[in-house]
Image 1: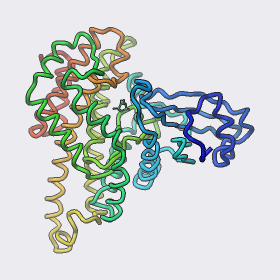
Image 2: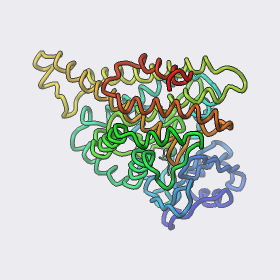
Image 3: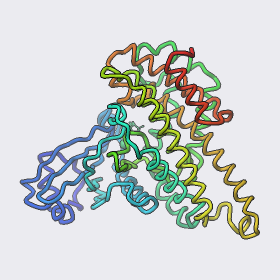
Image 4: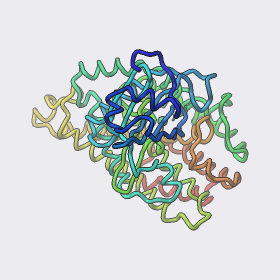
Length: 421
Ligand code: SR1
Ligand code: MG
């Protein structure tokens, strides 16, 4: 199969095509004709198959040469699979046990065979269903601190980091999606945008908001120019699979060298959207406890991220930035702490900026979230989304003045209860 030109798999063709690859066939076990194959991809871009063999079950993920959500009118290179494979291997090194094991990669077929995670479900679905997962705050905080710190000049050898920077710099088209869909389209009437009808007035207000449009472009400027570390690039709650005991991060095809706080902002934005959507999911009872839980998860995620980042700063800062030769080695540990405070402060303000923009694009742009989309009552959905949009605007525009998550908890509660206009 390796030598052949790319051909998209189907449920029918998969057994015969993958049956000839020993790395896959041996692992699955049994005769390919007996394998049970299901296509389960519900993301915006790729094919995903679950293949159940005689001895093991695998996930087969294959990129398509176009955006699945839109169709072949929007071509998208297969090389995103190459970046996903390389990102997964680096994440496994930097944060062992947090991503699915990769068993096989075929660049020509844009295909990755990996561990089937079971009984995991997608975190977004769990939050919509009102499940309170006990470990996600800590697990995701650790994942982000470890991958973001260890992929940067705070930790890596400069020559290795520059080689990685060069490798991921070719992920142009996926960055282009984020640059347009996330940072620009929500703020004008871009052709692919859509929003819930009841939002017209607030959308008009946001698109006329000069401060917001300036700050959004400052965040885009940071995204496009600050190559600080290898980021996952699309770390929303649909990119996380969970059980009560285990948290795994999937789908890093948007990986590139970008600002350190980008993943943190995206993820926390998705928790905030889960929070604002809870009012739309109360058909079977109050979600008050879920709301409290989500605010606690936000707190835990940020605090774990910050504390682990500080721990790595103190124990693994072997890269060319903020060298110990200038600080600790000269008996000036306080200088290292002072520098750390500045770095964490910048991560905090960037996190807020990226989070607010992610909230806007998921409500006003092309790619929406099931958290809101699953709310059938359009008026109720618009009311939840309005609160999220206003919250997002606040954190983007005021990010340099916001002191604590407690302050944002109060704002979120007030907006959610309709106490602020
Ligand atoms: C056209 S792709 C739309 C979105 O789907 C992906 O999951 C990313 O979030 C991207 O922005
Ligand atoms: Mg994805």
